[in-house]
Image (tube, rainbow, N blue to C red):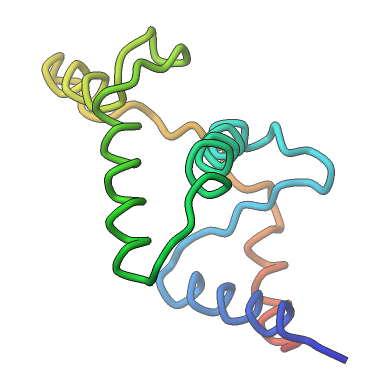
Length: 122
């Protein structure tokens, strides 16, 4: 049997605990709990990963960097009033309000304790 994913998950949970980062779970079958990331992942997969044959790690890094730069500085996003993410950030800082509240909700009660229990269980 292969337990690679369980070991990886435990390592991530331990790292989060060591760095005092709360772990937020997405309920199985509920990808819209993280719609922004799901949207980004889908676009990146459709526009870049499915269309590009990478010739090595350096090539992959360069192509991904170029795509991310375009995604963040050239393309308007409907979810932020048809601004680019870079333009939206500039607007937020120019208003002097700093960064908006995070989109993610706080972890439900007990999640941190659950993560600690999973780490102990190994």
